[in-house]
Amino acid sequence: MTLEGRLDFELAWERVKEDLRKVCFCDNPYIVNIAEANRTKWLDYIKSTFKNPTIPPVVDIPKKNWHIRPASMLTVQDQVIYSALLLDGIEEIKNALEWSSNKKRFSYVLKRNQKTKYWLEYGWYWKNFNTKSIELAHEYDYVLITDIAGYFENINIKRLISDLDSLGFEKDAKTVLNDYLNAWAPGKQKGIPQGYTTSSILAEVYLDSIDKNLEREGIEHTRYVDDMRIFCESHSECVNALHLLTRSLREKELNIQTAKSDIHNKDEAINIIEGITPIIDGIDQKIKNKLKSIPEYQITNELIRKEEGLNLERTFKEYIIDQKSQDFNKTLFHYLINKIKTPMAAYYCLNLLFERPEETKYIFDYFSRLHYENFNMVNVAEQLAKEILLENETQAISEYQKYLFIKWLYTTKIKTDTIISAVRKVINGPISIPATLDYSIAYLGENGDVSEFDFLSSKYSTFSDVCKATAICGLQQMERSRRNTLYGRARGNGDLLEFAVNYAKSI
Image (cartoon, rainbow, N blue to C red; front, side, top):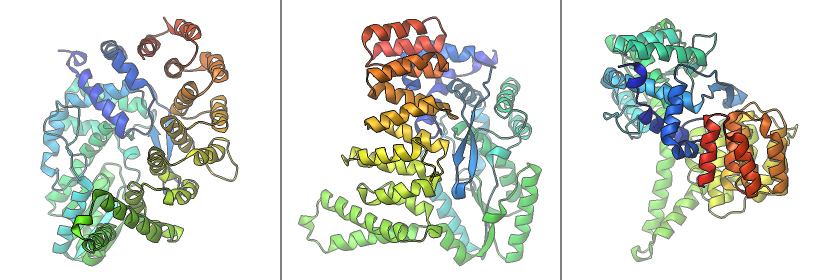
């Protein structure tokens, strides 16, 4: 059977839908609906693009201290083919990684049954990583805590393909995968695209030889993606292990991140690994103590939720708001902001957007929760439209922040004249992230008036096919005859636009 005939594009599409929903850095407001409305033809369309990878735009994703990391924005078609190629050899990968799963390696543990729409077993993997690490730290006197610098962007594609070859990956699938990975990293021959479960699984394959090398040398270790912990009886053993790890990584053209590497005694290590656990345990204990002071018949679910909320807010104030900027605890911030349901953290988060752009997604998730809890977020949205979209020169705004903000506007459906005007300006200006334009078009199409429809219609011919498809789906409030004219312009101009028209007519 040919490779194309062997690949499971149907299952691959199911996997990609999960990625689009959970892990991808960018997405499109309508693409899943468009595909599902034309499912059979959509899969045939993807097959027609097989062996023709698209060079993706690279988006700068904010990191701590104003640094950035590259993220390649693969087309959805390429994502499906990527998943299909990996599925072709997933049993070999699963068998090869089984020895370390939940023993040495606690990230991206593959499901035993690879016929479902999920790649990975459900579990608290970071928690398991910490639990096992603390258990080992109690047994050893010293712990080396380290991670790998620029992990995904430094994976050598030729070496990765060689690793897959050693697992028994089929030659034809391996050859095509090599072509795709190199097309996505033009001229570099290294780096695999971040933000896709397929890449994360391949990254686990790439480090498997490192795990085995440490195991062969009798060195106890745990690993979560590129975070590594090595456990030794003495400081000198830790130094030797560090040197061995450094040499092993260099063989795969990787390097330790020296700024994040250190040797600790067991007490220091346990304290570092436990992280925010004592603070969280303290919250739980305060809630229990409060409830003990209340007669049991007076305790209701509403009372428990109220007490939990109050303690979360007190903790946020004490450990986040009242702390100096340099003492910002990212992990604790994520834990608390994902649970707080009142505006008490809103002002702090507004400032944090511009001080720590890497926290933007968490902040907008919090703002969405406030919106759905019926808190008025219009003033916040207008202020951010001025700061983020109208380019206040006093703030350093990343393009990725603009994307996340416009996506937030679209999902919350907050609209004012000021916001609509700001989004229109985005469409008129230079845009480095295609998905920003997609969500801007969708926002204006669903929330604008006749003047916005005229504006989008006038810009239609300048759009890419994906943006044209977005406009077709978004302009549902346009007068029917004009809508039909737009559909007529799209007919006969490619499969994607045909699919978009079919979906738009079904709404």
